[in-house]
Image (cartoon, rainbow, N blue to C red; front, side, top):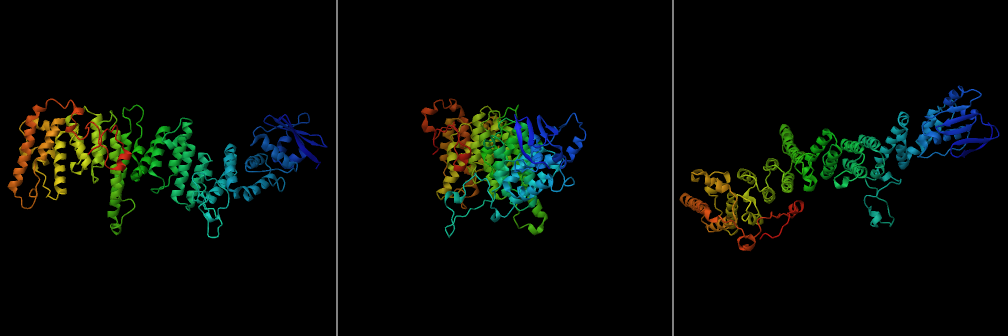
Length: 617
């Protein structure tokens, strides 16, 4: 073989070999011409042998426009044919391997040919390196489908997944980890000998994999999951990190408009990779995924799967998480129907688990993971109360939407109904024109016995409530005062039971005006008078006690209802509504035109009261 010295490049269009012999073949790759010699090339490339046999003496040009990797990859192969040292690395090895395959540089042509050399390099170096494997996987995308046919992608994926699943004590290579400070980075980690050791976090590999495009990322995560050595929480952390990295605006609950099709495939792939186990990712993350899926136009299957998963762990959501914009074309601000499906899924989860528990007699006394705890139910009930208070601000929210959602959690016992009251009051404030029947219907969602002192103080001065509700609140407040003072708590008079049920029974007036008056909105002066009259009722130790006989109880019932009817008969006297509320502060301890602030700090945080100008005392 002649002694060849170097390759010259002129104007990046002509490449020729300087040697003692004149070149006898021109290989044209795209727009670059390589002036080379037949002998070294044909001795190691079966394809060039075939191409060279088709040229004549007058034309020594060979065209190979479709070689993988283009001129750069062909140059590596040409150098190898000339016996020159070839520098391979993670950035060019796949191009060289695909080009060598294209040129058919196999062992049957010559022992120790380029394909063999590259395969050895891949297995002994590239696949043993964490970051090199990721780089090779990234560069392989532009060389599809040949890189896939050569199993290079498959080998890379398996090498990466294997390293991600390795025991933490064996991780001794560099990796990217910027999401949070490690203890030793804060100077807090040291052992007894004073030698600082690096603690490898369980999710050390997550950030590096975020560099992969979604199809390759999906293949790696699927491979990792198949090995079943990493916890679902770690896999969930990888999916979360990828979403934040690859979906612009995801952290703010929205996606910036760019390549919507690409973002849609990313969201759907992440949803498909979610571990089946509950709690592997947070409910807040699932809700962000749902908002992203809606925004990018994902299919119903993807959105339905997210709704199902959110419902399974809805106790971990917040009110802001649930504020999902309604689809375009709808008059409402928020998509209440999708939240209702989440709540239904949450409640169905408990029902199904109870059925399973009953079918298996051995597990009847054991709390299964799917059975809802009382704490979870209470958290979701409070969550829905807060959500209702927020959506009630929408003037286009139909009453039926509000009531249907509220009734889903009405069976969940709560120690206080302040959240329900606040939601009702907000709806009445934003929808002043609703009918008496609708006002009565929405107020039935609230249990007046479970209002806190602050809520009662607000309710008895609330001009948006029907008189029926105000009377109930006042009476139960009197009962509470009696109980706290050590006196016996009286039974609920029959007349007030009738108020709650919506009928007056035998004491109901023959005219319909009385019923309308009970359901009408109470004026400010009526509220003041009712409060004064009920306060005058003596709730002594004998009331409700064991010594009280039936006649005494009946006489008190009649006395209470007689006073209330008397108030209603004098209703004409209150024709002039409280026109100067601001000047009559003595009539009200708080401005009843404002909504009640939550007595619960946690509720107040999730559902702030708007324009609160007073303190309830």
